[in-house]
Image (cartoon, rainbow, N blue to C red; front, side):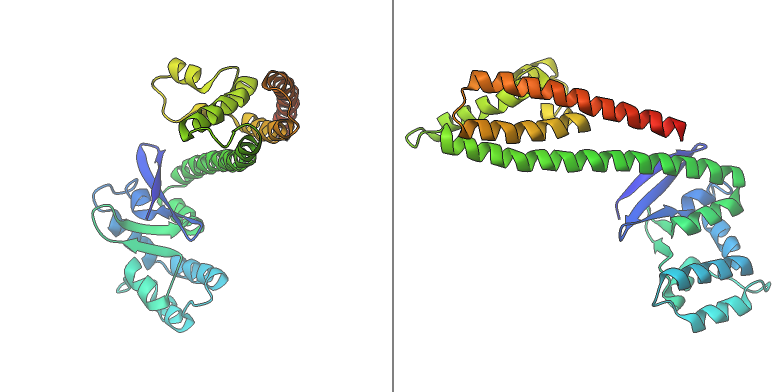
Length: 275
C-alpha cells in the first residue's frame, strides 16, 4: 500500500490510496492523544454507540456488501461496560470497507477520509482542523501534478507525430542509425530553442545537478505550447519549409501562445482571489 505523509502539529499522518479513495491512518492520528498506545485510543472510540452507528451508516451508504445483521448486533451491544470492538473484528464480521487494518511494523488502522475526520474530531477538534487544512493542501498539489502529467503525456504523443514527419521527409534511406539519431536530436532542439531558448545540451550544461531533460521541468503552459509547436513543426516539415524558417515561425508562435496562456492564467488567479 503506497502512502503519502502529512505533518500535522508535529505528528506524521500517513495517507493511502485504496481503490482511488483516500484512507487516513487512524493510528497516526491517535498518537496525538496517546503516542505510546494509539491502538487503545482507537478501541475506546469504537466502544461508543455513536461511533458504531456512524460507522454503520457510512457503510450502508457506500458498501452494498455490508452485513446489516452483524451490524445490529454490535449496535445493540455498544455502550455497555463490557463492549469492546477492535477494528479487525468490525471489518471481519460486517465486511466493512471504511476501515482497513494493516499489520506489521509500518501497519496500522486506516479509515476513509470521512471516517478519519470524524475520529480526528473525537481526538481533538483543533487537530482535526489542522488535519483538514493539510489534507486539502495535499489534494491541491496532487491536482496540479495530475494536470502537469496529462500535458506531459500529450507532448509525448504529439512528439510521435513530429518524429514521423522527420522520418518521412528528412531522413534519407541510406543514412545509418547513428546519423538518423543526430537528425532527430537536431529537430528536437529546433523545438527546444523555439520554446525554451536553448538546446538540450545547453540546458544540461547549465543544470548539472538535475536529472531528466529540459521538458521534465516545463510548466503546464509551456507543455501546452510545446505540444502545439510539435504539431505545427510536423506540418511545416511535410511542406518542405527550411529549418531556419521553421525555427523563426515556431519561436513567434511560442511567444504569442505563451502570452495568451499566461494572460488566461492571470485572469483565473484574479477570479479565484475574488471568489
